[in-house]
Every structure is written in structure tokens, then in C-alpha cells.
Image (cartoon, rainbow, N blue to C red; front, top):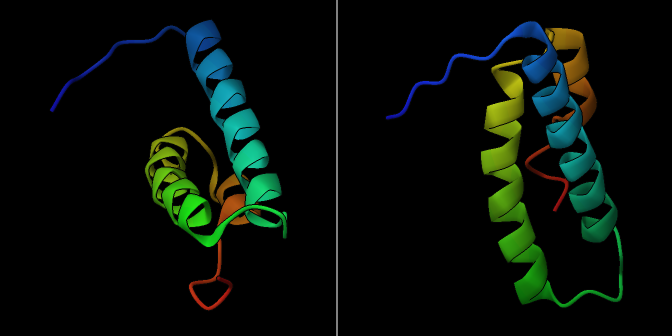
Length: 72
């Protein structure tokens, strides 16, 4: 396990980067042209990025990116 110390500006930037990455992955997961194997890889990465984002964001913001397990 690693630990990082971020100042307020760095936290906001990390929050922004993670949100944008989650948005891109959600877009790709909803794209019917993408192969199932690729979607599984995206889903796996999504889970990791979401857990990182959950450490920084408020519960209201987190709920925006929470996916239903039955969704896929």
C-alpha cells in the first residue's frame, strides 16, 4: 500500500481526472460496437478507478458513477 499527501488543488485535479476517466469508460461500456472481451477489460478497470474516486468524492458524487451489478 502506498500513501500520498496532496494539497487541495492537487485533490481537485485528481478528482477531475478520475471523473473524466469514469465518464469515458461509461461511454465505451454503452457502445454496442465494442467487443465483449474489451468491455470486460474496461469493466475491470472501471472498478479500480471507481474505488479511487470513492476515496475523494462525496456520497452524492459517487452515486452518479455507481453501476448496478445487474447492468452488464
